[in-house]
Amino acid sequence: TERLRLSASEGWRVDPSSFVLAKLGWEMRWDGSPANELLSGTVLYVRKFGDLVPLQTFVSRLLFNIGWRVDRDVQFFADAQNGLRGYRLDAFEGDKRIVWNAEQRIFGGKELLQLFSPGAAVFFDAGAVAEPGRPLHWTEVKSDAGVGLRIGITRAATNTILRLDAAYPLNAD
Image 1 (cartoon, rainbow, N blue to C red):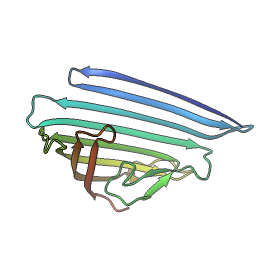
Image 2 (image 1 turned 135 degrees about the vertical axis):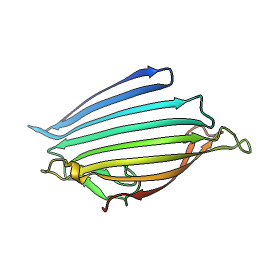
Image 3 (image 1 turned 180 degrees about the vertical axis):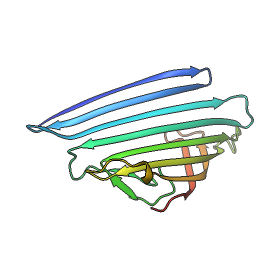
Image 4 (image 1 turned 135 degrees about the horizontal axis):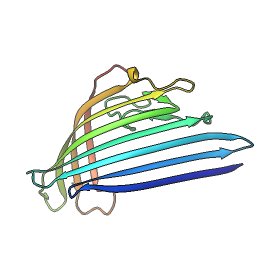
């Protein structure tokens, strides 16, 4: 058995206050024939609004995954942990996925008690998953909207943001 993995990423500055970062990856296992082929991509757009008070940032992410001849244990999810924050865990699963997130982040700009910095977010998510043998259908796109609280831990070396989101699903699961 052989494994092959290729990946590439590139970033572009759109203007002094925004950038785009794209990533593309492909991997497979060769076991006499191709197996468990996975193609994944992400496009991230970030724009900082430095002239607004309070400070604000807009973030948008488009993610896709496609699998061919995938192993039984390989699944792509669209749920509360994987881009659709308004839906239960393991809500949608399959071998093809597309998810789009858009989030406006608002920062308080103040450090409280020299420990944390509060912020908030307003977001919209949309995505679809298809089961093996079925194509993605735009009629099956699920979406949600919500608000979130962001707590920046100013003295932490890693995991510096605590997130608490409340989302409302706009479609039935």
